[in-house]
Image 1 (cartoon, rainbow over the protein chains, first blue to last red):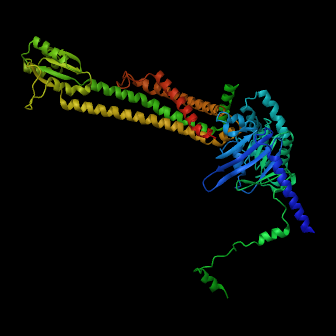
Image 2 (cartoon, rainbow over the protein chains, first blue to last red; image 1 turned 90 degrees about the vertical axis):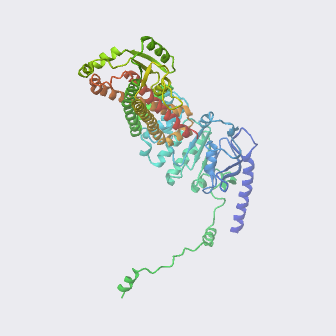
Image 3 (cartoon, rainbow over the protein chains, first blue to last red; image 1 turned 135 degrees about the vertical axis):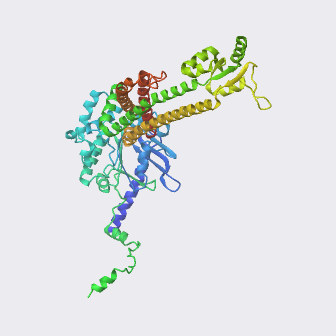
Length: 297
Length: 297
């Protein structure tokens, strides 16, 4: 009985997965797509590929988790999206625009439409919280009045109103990440990318960060979060894109971190799988051992 | 907005990075100080060497029975030669009076005037003195010497002394020139390297700025302005110290030493302008060039 139920659930999820994928991919070049990747390939060297032929699309206003083991290409994808790297093959369209067409002069203006959040926060170490957030506005040529108006607002929203004049190294990890989210969102960008935003944070703090990202998503911003945080993905039940060795292996609406939950029995089987037995090196007899003999009675 | 913004950014960045800023300022100060002392010394030495070289002359001694017509003819011939700057006639009477003043007793003993009429030839280029000698006194095929005019007794340019003067002054000029060149190269390298280091220590900051969407100019100008301010401050301090040294040490000595009052040394005003310009230009260029690499993200 239990077995059939599990089978049913599996089949359902597989069906849903196929449907999701079809719905999500949309038409190519659709302006309703915030991000569209077509056969994107990035090789670091001949043997190691960051991404190989990745194809997917994300619609405007979606909240998408990008999951997968280390080395599966999550960070590569993020770096391609902020055009820190160039793809070897394929096309990346953001809001219907091909990133390959952006030249060095246009790049900063493209990046102003992105909010980017990193695992290591990437704050300017010798500026206060206030100055860090203000910098993102100064870059766009905002007036001082505008900055004075917007920065306290966004800091209140992210819960940092009391830390205005602190330096990043005086803040906890969670607070620093809030600052970087505030900086990413102060220009109200249509697309927010977060690369392991909770990678350095404890579970409690992570919830707060995810809430913040979710709230930002509710304002209409498309949010793409690359993460290892399975608990968070399972709890939030948003769309999940799973990468493995540079290929999208799963695209599921309301997905979980792993395709299906593992039963205790399956986990036990996994643990019992043959693996090299740990062995001690054969002990060599050393001169000191004789003393042990002598003192033993 | 932007000029004032950039200046404010540059100033606050100097105060935030006090140690690298001080290092850059100090390296500008020290190198310009050394350069400021060395430039006049090089010039004085070269001037002195040129003075010595100016004293290289060729004496054409006439036969004792040469008539004023002969002298006039020889003078015409010598003046027609290549590389002759001027010819001065010293009659035997003038020479006698001059020598007698030096050593009256010896000349009183002589009774008559043994000195010949002399044509003192100054070459255009001291290096040509020996060529001039062979032009007035060409070598015969047999190996002896003839003269271009029968009324010339001999041509004197004590060959050894001329040689010595020429080599010695050439060595002095070459060495000081080489030292000056090395010093200038060392100064440029030292200043631009210190500036490079301070840029390098903030490469992460530059990277973050790029990710937030700052244009290259927006990132570069505060850095370059900072370098200009540091270069100018260092140069001004160096000039101040040089001024103190000039008033306290050099000026009182000028009347006592011919070397220091050599007319060819650089004016203090020109020196100040050169040092200030060099300090600012080298720092600013060093900063702009070393930033280029980090801006290519």
